[in-house]
Image (tube, rainbow over all chains, first blue to last red):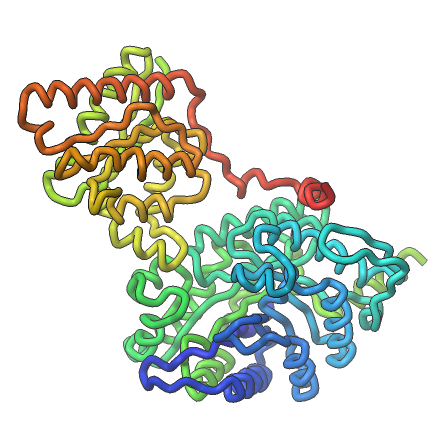
Length: 364
Length: 206
């Protein structure tokens, strides 16, 4: 099982001090956070992609390329890459290039983006969100697998004899996760291709996440990629930890109460009861996280949101320390003990290459 | 005997409220009209006051609390809806509107709805026609022709009461006719029956 962190990259005023970091500081903080994630033994760092304030990560492959040079082990990913407003040709090129630079330590998560004004800035319309995700990914999928592509669709100029360069490293396209909070069409899309499905698992109750994941699992089996329990599932999650749970609650409450997405709504306690948010001791986080598999089945990737809502960098780094030192080692052991042998691990470049070579050997 | 369910939604605030009183009269009249048509009704009443905080939270977080989620399911599964609001500032109350703002998309499509309101003066009765009816039409509900307004005088004066009772009976008859002649509501579950991917691909090409 893979564990990691994902960042939205928001610049939010710290509600306890009134301090707002600059974009420069925030970008450098994201780098520090990614390096810390590798240092404490996490498996994945994923950055968001946004094209409007108050978010800084508009150019994920620039950041991930820099991180590729500064890290040696961690998988670099996205949460999410906008499959709607980005040109699929550019995604094919950028992430193949990143894959080469990072020696295969790359996968990506596709999402639609839910900010209406962003679409027209890129010549698109949010009402076409699903058709854009369907068509653009159909093209991206081919660009990474077919040397020469002739193509015509609704949303971009046709391609005649086009070769996307560089070709994916070792001829193995980056593994793709499809992320969606509530669109069954995207779970269906992930299942159709046999790709991974990721649920953000922060903003909705677990009962909802469960419905989305099991739709994906059933359809994964329907499309012949394996049994439903072998489908590749990732979950998000949100935690804040201190040795004593009452300290965690006291320290996190002002950030929760003023958070951009759910602030000024339900109380922290109500939100913890109705969503997977866990604010408490490391043991409470371990216990809660271990319950996720009861809803969604044995899954392959768990990412945590740590740096948001104006939390200072120092606090975020402390949180990642606790996660890496106290929480993840226990989760690794406990999840592994519960997982049946026929449930696969999350695909990596190495595992996909080995599978491809084994298949080639078998047919030779 | 056919069975059908009605969801009665009252946005009254006081205890007791004239909005609730009107809702009860409409529910009772509709029950009688359905039984006359050979239908056994199950009637569920929802006081929005009890969900006021949940409605605001749903607006802020994007998802309903467990309790409000059950109300959504109740409305989605109902064969007909009676929706009653107090008139505030010449329109529906904010709570009433907010409930329908957070209700899942498409919940009311093709669903028979009776709209009604109580108000401090009969001069607000057309709020039913300029505020409630267009909203439910937008939501693609089937709104019965008679909308029922109850002004203060309707509750006191015997002849006025007769007028209100007549309007209640007429509206209830209209709702009962629509509910009785339709197949039972069967809310679609996109998580059970997704659009197959081949169709999503084909939709893009058309």
